[in-house]
Amino acid sequence: MNRPWISASRNLFLRTTARQCSLTRARLTVQFRRNLTQSVVRPISFKGIFRSSNEEKRQVLLEQDNLFHVLSKSPLPEMRDRASMIKKYGTCPVCESEGHKNKPTYDCPDCGYPTHCCEEHHHQGREAHKEVCSVLRQVNEDDHDLRSGRSMKEFEFPSAQGFDEAVNMANWDVFFYTRSFPSMDSDRSIRHVSKLLTYPITIASVLHQATPYKYGEQITAEGMRSIAALKTVLYPTNQLNNDAQAQVRTETVNIYLLGARAEATLPSHIWLQLAYLFPSTPFHIHFVGPDALAPNQEPHTTSVNERLFFTYDNALYEDYHEKIEKFDPYTDLFFMFSPGIGHFKEGWKPSIEKLLETKCPIFITGYDESDMDNDIKAVEQDYQFDWILKPTVNEYRSLKRDVNLMDVRQTILANYGIWGIRGKRYDVVHDPEANE
Image 1: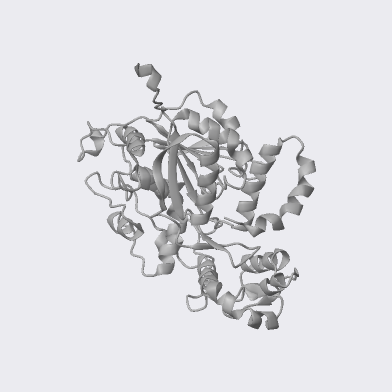
Image 2: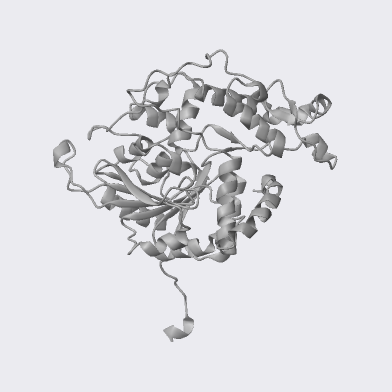
């Protein structure tokens, strides 16, 4: 996918390169990619959305009939800051078409975002802006709602499921119903929850026995072998389904999240939703990458309970890889959430080579079809691998859009699509002379 905001930030990158001479060029590339994605398409700041049970009730700042505000005049400082960033780094699209670089200082009254340099250019570009205006207004209201101070009932997630309760993973709606989530009365609530859960439930969706992806359609023969190996651990055959005390504790499943960004900021109880779907299995989730830790934090390991462990490490994966004694396709898998391999092939190369050596499944997501195609082409050009999951729309993509603050015409759905590969297990070569 062609991402114009990359070139817009290139000068800033070049100015900082000299101060980071201790890193190799490949490492700089990967780190820049991570920082760029984190800053341009900002994940929700989860601090303040969730509060402990003994915390006093938050003040309601905005009522439900007062969620639309022009960003630069919003009563919420964070939204005003967002407008300032757009005005600082964005470009008026009409001026851009004329070869100029004027800033978008005029606020569209319909979506509330700074979109053009003046009212005249706003009218001139109205037809083109219509394509994204309604989407931006929806994002505007969603973001104000998240910060409105209301009681977020939709975030009161269910706890452990009964062992005799079947969960259907066909799509968000069916999952919410069969998993006994609180009733969500609006599409906005569903968007909010999908944004939070897209990372853990995307992982669960490819591992669960009720996966929405079908063998022979999305899942290949090699994919069935890889997923079946993991399922021997996730679904032990000798457990007694109706007796919680008799559940057989399996080996720990290690999930390595490479280039972790937004997923590393999720509160731990969000990740519990993954663990609840596999009640016999302990999980160890490894958040690896330059943005996996806040500044000044040291790598560390922590746990929620005896079945869910987290390791946070800001090393590049090729370095973290050396800390692991061995990898097992029955217990280990990798996820790369929108890694941008196609844009930074050389930066990702050392990591991908080591991933493929493990013969463990690797699942990769993308912002949209074009983003996935770029990554797939880059991987096909440089590596030998087996397909395990053909590229497809992710049933558990975020339904809440993110906006590129350097070009508000561009919006994405986190984890829009998903595909999976594995290091090639064997090559069959026909040699006629060997048969003589």
